[in-house]
Length: 74
Image 1 (spheres, rainbow, N blue to C red):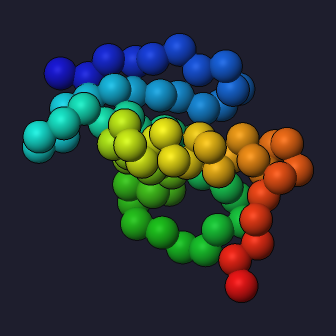
Image 2 (image 1 turned 180 degrees about the vertical axis):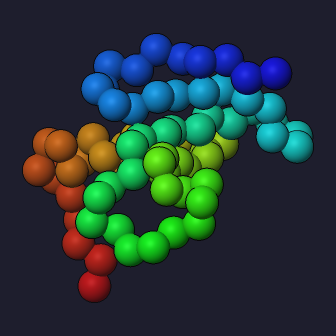
Image 3 (image 1 turned 180 degrees about the horizontal axis):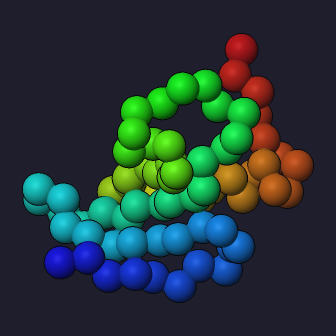
């Protein structure tokens, strides 16, 4: 069973669901118009599915970027 979660970001929806063994979150946004041809499913939306640990790590990376503290990979 999936549950929609509140998002503070316009045009971003969050959905919590059970993966095979743990809860995950799906982050969905409208498809960018400048992307090349994609499958029928990807024509309208793009999404990423993350475990809680993956979401935590990504959130920290995004926070560092927002604060101008990102680290470039060499």
